[in-house]
Image 1 (cartoon, one colour):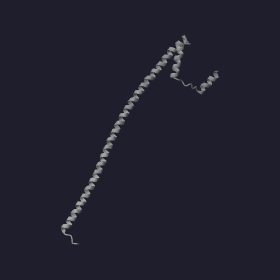
Image 2 (tube, helix red, strand yellow):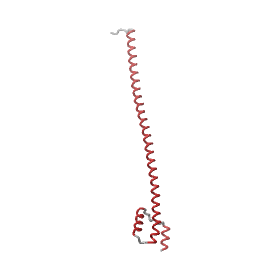
Image 3 (cartoon, helix red, strand yellow):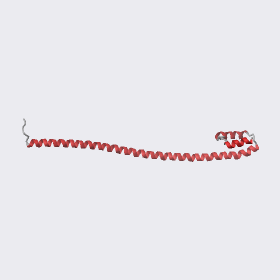
Image 4 (tube, helix red, strand yellow):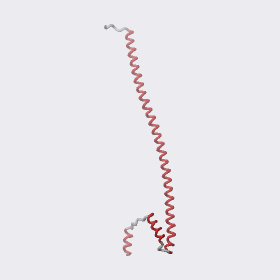
Length: 135
């Protein structure tokens, strides 16, 4: 039962071990390459996603800037129009008050302006003291 190994048997065992080791090596190499390929595929997908997000953010920033510029331009125009209307009213109201101080339309226009452009009646302390001294 314990016959000595012949050279052919030893060669066969050696060849089997080498084949088994080669198989294990190739299997490990495939497994590592598969994992590397998966990691590089994931990395490529993440890079593409990141680039898309950057493009989207740049586009949104440009749209937001354009919208803000339009709003600021419109606001500036409306502020100018409001100032012009206020001044035009004052130019017309002064002579009208001299001619007809009790005119109800003048009082109504003044009330509309007062409600549209409320003035905060904060009198500084020094002015209050001066007004108190006048009374």
